[in-house]
Image 1 (cartoon, rainbow, N blue to C red):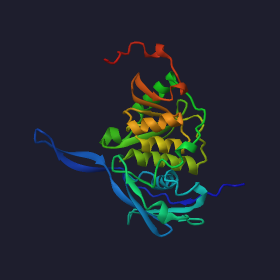
Image 2 (image 1 turned 60 degrees about the vertical axis):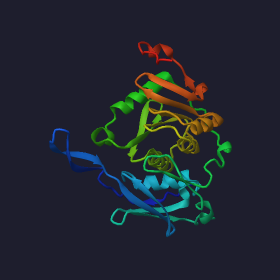
Image 3 (image 1 turned 180 degrees about the horizontal axis):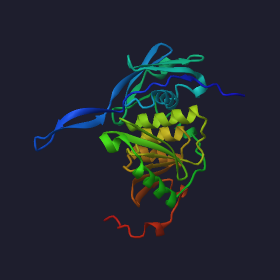
Length: 281
């Protein structure tokens, strides 16, 4: 049976903006900074939420947001996503409506994400029922992931002040997304995966941000069993990852890393870390 794909606009917006700055020597010059714009999401003509975003891939972002909030079960439930930057709005039309939308969105939790993310209802609902694929990663693949991000051209390198997420299959970089918050970046990847029919088995998610409970739950809902971060991990993020058997690797820079949970998914190759100084106790 042919999959029903939603109709998507291809809205685009500049990712950076030039401003004049003055440095400590009194010198004036132009500098690029990340753009940030409000995108108000309407579902079946009802206002849902306003996302602060760079606006690189707004249709993927909106679709992924609805999926990760469990407001829709699949992208086939979405008929269209129409983004209009003139008014800063994304109009979502569903095929059959969303049952109990008012009840599902009655409780909103402002999360720790940069730019303040939001989750509706109890984000722990259904976590215990999630089953992750048997994805594993070798230490060599981990180093390849970290190196690929280091070499990736990015808004962060030219303008700073953004977070990035990336999806890998082994050592192959499938998609790299940046946004003002890591929650937006992971939602955009979720939207891209669903819209293009990419399965989660064997996939690894990389994020520049810390591994909070929100990030772990979203990754797990996407079926991602291995998550890598150059930052650390929160207590609740660790608790959820441990419960799910998700491999959470943090502080991954150069050849250093810490595996916080799911170490059985990581094939260690200590000889590859030769020459790396051990962290002080």
